[in-house]
Amino acid sequence: MLRIEDINKSYDTGKSKLHVLKGINLNINEGEFVSIMGSSGSGKSTLLNIIGILDEADNGIYELDGVPIKHLTEVKAAEYRSRFLGFIFQSFNLINYKTALDNVALPLYYQNVSRKERTKRAEEYLEKVGLLAWANHLPSELSGGQKQRIAIARALITDPKLVLADEPTGALDSKTTHDIMKLLQDINKEGKTIVVVTHEPDVAAQTKRNVVLKDGLIESDTFINQIVL
Image (cartoon, rainbow, N blue to C red):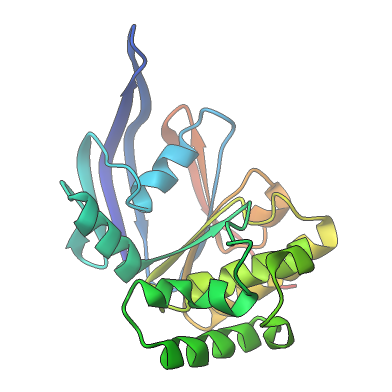
């Protein structure tokens, strides 16, 4: 599903180069539920951006579903993101003037899916996350947990190969965090591959595998006894 071999990434600070990733090797199989942890500056956000085709490594190999991800134009990178990936963000990234249904359906608009089909599939995914009754509500009328469920439905609607969740519970209280992680566990049980970047050990404990970064290297890679919620 995902193969990373000897990935390096540096940034030019003007006076010197900051070596952020220093030879990352990581394989993630289809159906895994993986958390990536690390302190600020460990490289986890840079790694996520490379996996998410938002940034490119200086060297090394990155393959996603058998496709080499390298030297992509902006158009090709956008095509691959649409084809392979679903994104969930800490800040939800919903469009404030669009309803829940329209927010969920938006990725299909960029895939030139008809409005009738977009609406049908958006309703299906809203029902999947338990929010069909809120389809015509604006984000301002939803709680934080409801917004994140909308964001999850939006991430899933294109049936991506891989779901990337960047601190998906960072803006939520403990009860809502519990509910969102339970939803992600259920989605994973259906066979979806999920990678979560988090700084919360309690969140990482609810995945099936925990990768810890330190100073641009993988410090540990552990399969864990998942806490079933």
